[in-house]
Length: 166
Image 1 (tube, rainbow, N blue to C red):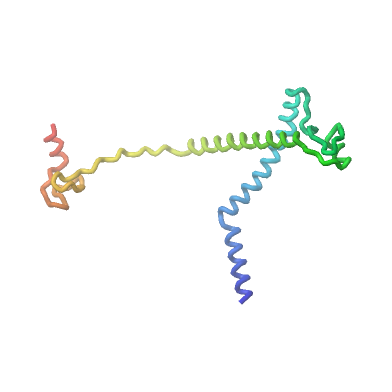
Image 2 (spheres, one colour):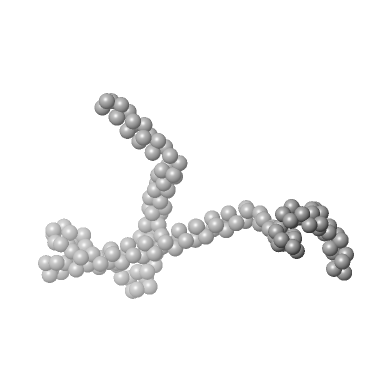
């Protein structure tokens, strides 16, 4: 009995793993990790040096508070001394990183949506024709019918109705 349960669980696990949306999610996670590495490099190697220039060569990575009250020139020196630090400069860098990732994802999705809408042919919807109603029972009658199927009254053809309306 235990072997049967194990085989059933293994089978269920295989079905779960190879289900389409699980595989799509796995691919999304891998691509997201690669995209995150690119954005992290963009932030740390391009935007942060530019931001440092704009803020008077302020180095965000060395913005910290040493919890022992001592003065350290860099975060690395404080960490070498074994001092606990509050690294608010690194936090600012992560906020900028997050905002840039959000902006990049926004533009990527916007571009993909634009491409998807270009590839779709706009479907022209036919204007919905008003149903032809019997004047006696008010039930819908087929356009080519000469009698109402509900009350059996004689119906003029649509051409005769148009002629009489003129």
